[in-house]
Length: 157
Image 1 (cartoon, rainbow, N blue to C red):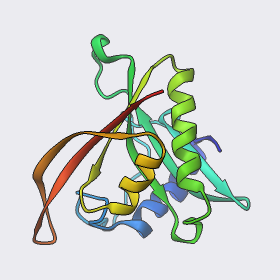
Image 2 (image 1 turned 135 degrees about the vertical axis):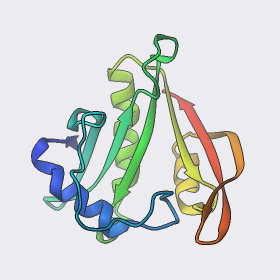
Image 3 (image 1 turned 120 degrees about the vertical axis):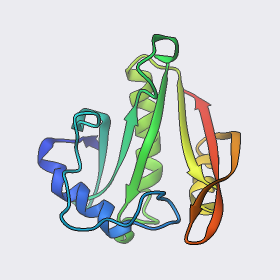
Image 4 (image 1 turned 90 degrees about the vertical axis):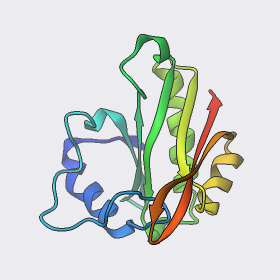
């Protein structure tokens, strides 16, 4: 586990393109020309990178949910991606645990996320790591012809 670097831009963008699916994304499929992974509002400092056997296996994006002082104690996971070849090897779990540690290091005490209701594997992982369902937005997204719930989860760190 390590902080992301500007040099990770292309490898992380390629991961996003390879793993895209309506199981976890509400955005349209990526199409060329592809832009940068990092942006002014999502710099490398908001990302942790998992490496497995010396290869980048995935990332997690950890951000303040708003610029408001009233919720500066909260961080939000706004992206988690793991390569297919690295799944089942603990990379996602390690990224979640690192995000909890980083949240504490930043002086925040709460971590939240949003997950699509039909992503049962991700929901099981989040629950196993101490996240609880705090709300559901029924039918919030129309994906591949089906309405999908947006599930809000959180935990104290």
